[in-house]
Amino acid sequence: MSTNAELATIFAEMAGILELTGANRFRVNAHDRVARVLEALPDDVAELADDPARLTAIDGIGEGSAKKIIEYVETGRIGEHDELRREVPAGLLDVLKVPGLGPKTVRALWEKGGVVDIATLRAKLESGELESIPRMGKKTLENIRDNLAYADQAGRRLRLGAALPIAENIVEHLQRLEGVTRLEYAGSLRRGRETIGDIDILACTDDPAALTDAFTGMGHVDRVIASGETKSSVRLADGVQVDLRIVDPDAFGAALLYFTGSKEHNVVLRERSIKRGMRLNEYGLFPDEGADGRDDDRPPQKRGISPVASRREEEIYRALDLPYIPPELREDRGEFDHDLPELVEVDDIRAELHAHTTASDGTMSIDELAEEARARGLHTIAVTDHSRSSVQANGLSDDRLREHIDAVRDANTRIEGITLLAGSEVDILADGRLDYGDDLLAELDVVVASPHSSLRQDRKKATARLLRAIRHPLVHILGHPTGRMINSRPGLDPDISRLVDAAVEHETALEINANPARLDLRDTHVRAAVDAGALLAINTDAHSPAHFDFLRYGVLTARRGWLPADRCLNTWSSRTLHAWLKRSR
Ligand SMILES: [Zn+2]
Ligand SMILES: [Zn+2]
Image 1 (cartoon, protein in one colour):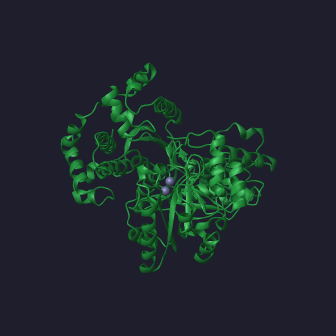
Image 2 (tube, rainbow, N blue to C red):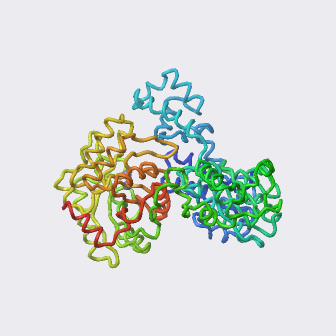
Image 3 (cartoon, rainbow, N blue to C red):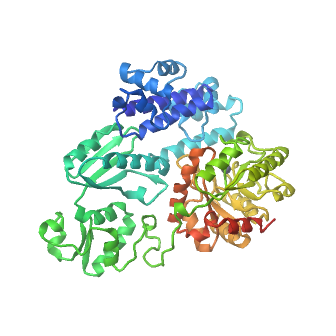
């Protein structure tokens, strides 16, 4: 294992142990952050450790962490890590990774139930032994059983929010090399899928050997799987595989098209080529040579056959009588026979309509939130803290909300250059009622209604519950409608077509929550909403300044759902948006 990989594992483990032993949240997060930074860092941390200033220059690594990194590089261990490890059984950290199992529950399972690893957890669930632990009802244990099964099946696909920064860091790192003329990531990552299997990178270079060496020698490489003239594969610390392909600049467009996929999209392209007397492969679009060429694996260019198009994707689409199809639409979901929409872009977004402050579970004050939103060029920021039933998120009582509304309105008169809206992310209770009375909701500028509990309801109950919220005349936006968490919680499974029809009828917008763990609505649901004529909101649900960066994941999901900019509230001018919000007031 590389030093980066070893250290990432150690910091992640320290974060896990701190969480289990009830340490301060900030300490847990700081360790967790260092683990993620090291995981995505292509530079060799052992080299950087020669100069502490170079370590602390990395975003997310403070002085304390830098000291620990240096300690590890010099001695092969970290004293704090050794101490922490003595506090809990090693296998307990795996139990903590089971979706839905928080540190408090794992601690109870350990101290009161004798669970020390996944194997003892399974055995004790089986034997019924855990039922005697206080607050471990049959239902809780049933949930744990389901979550264990769900975790097995979710497998090792990486969330978009983890994969994209890794790929971008690698591209940036390798682009600095002499001789490299092009470098791009392809695959499902380029299509913006919510989870990614492998990361595919394509490159053109004058010095393939140097690029291959730099790629396989990156600091966070755990194992080199293959290292060849045109293709190398490595596995990174967190298990993700990255493939690098070096291609001829003349064939770059064809290779990019081929390795971006999807398979289904490419099948249609190949059939279309054949109908036009041509052949499409990863080297280009060629005139059909008949049976002779079909079994020859060499690039046709090497056999003296000139391509019809190969340098750029656009040229290949044009030669097939198609407009350029953006990667997010390449799923064979109608992109060949529909007019393509003007898809929403990150730069179109001008308002954030779902954000939290320290009044509930955010880290920013009202002023800090406004400042961050203004710095990001937004004309409007809605302050939407949690409602009273979200106890774990410090949801606001009626009285606290009234005070909060006053504080937001006061800030709005003081702060220049951005409009602050007083809002709430109000819980949709299990039966579809909202967590505040109508009188109080009517005082708010914007109401986002979201489900946070009872997320295992059956389809019928979930549909009725969400329909009731959509039809509520004071609700503007249905927040993260299913409540799913990618790779860890399936969430509600409502009848989406009924929801989108009701959303159109009642002019309630449906949210695409940009948090990469949520991306809810998901792409196919967005498409159903767009097809039905509904309005969508893309919100980051920011709890801290860095969360504003989630926006691009929401926009990618929106694009995968064919969302045009004008159907997204967040792109509207201040005047249009505020008039729309006031319509029900
Ligand atoms: Zn929420
Ligand atoms: Zn929220």
